[in-house]
Length: 214
Image (tube, rainbow, N blue to C red; front, side, top):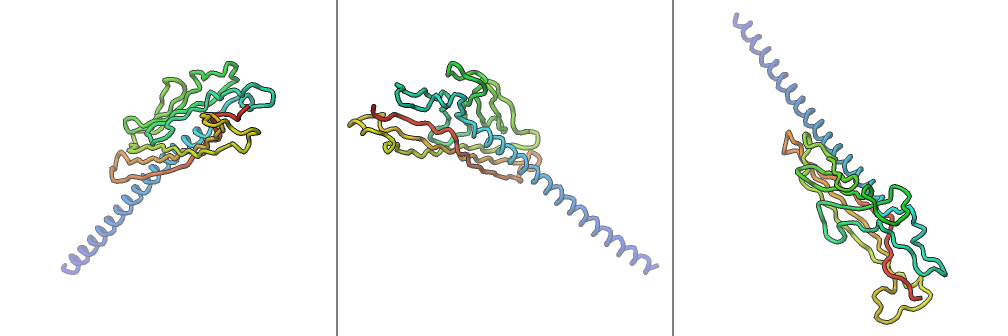
């Protein structure tokens, strides 16, 4: 009888140990899945933002902005503006051409942006049309930072004539612009699980400020 009780106790101990290990493995597996989902959601949001920002400044009539000999001046790209232009912000706005632009004016459906609002990143698709990019049911975005960097390049070497003294517009300068995007988020079900992603966007349509002396 004693041997039976001892054997039963040992069996129960082994079963309890095994059950504890199994429960621990299941918890760890669930935590890994949740962390992987969090990273995937953050990366997906960063990829969408990066791809869309690369379109900033696209102009279907870009050839009109190139000065040619005999022309009084080149047309100005109406889609050049990107905000923020200097300091970091939790929102970014930009424009790009979506169709043939005959009047060189930005249409309502050509205004875009991203912003952090109530724990979610929202995407602007046209004037006053905001939609959630991230799901607040599973992910809460705690930080969204867009930091601009502008490299100013002097284009005097491309001018045929020297600029007049004191000119504010000559020589022309090319602005090479980049945006650093950083997103931090945490799981709604477990506030202790937090991750961050970063990306760098080089804007492809560089504005030229000023002009050569005529």
